[in-house]
Amino acid sequence: MEKFSFKKGFSQVMQKDAVDVRAEIMTALNITTRSSWSARLNGNVEPKVSEAQEIERIFAKYGVTDVWGEA
Image (tube, rainbow, N blue to C red; front, side):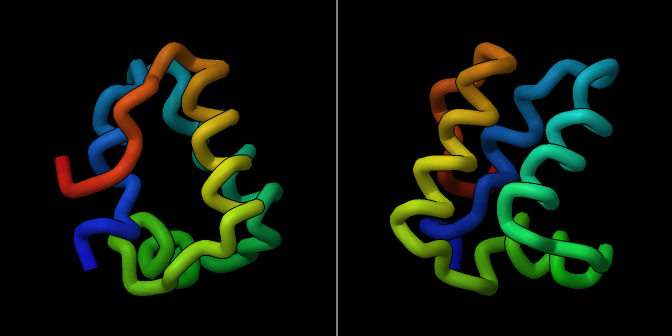
């Protein structure tokens, strides 16, 4: 499921921004639990095109452009 994982992008986020990035992604994808976050982060759930675009937009806001794949 590596191609749906965004661990690579999340690993590039500065530590001070990690909580904000996670919160923004969770809000954008309507995720409310840590297990759902983990499933999305690890690529166990294939994102819709609109969700993938939103994930990329959030990472771009923090200067991360290489988002998809394992860290």
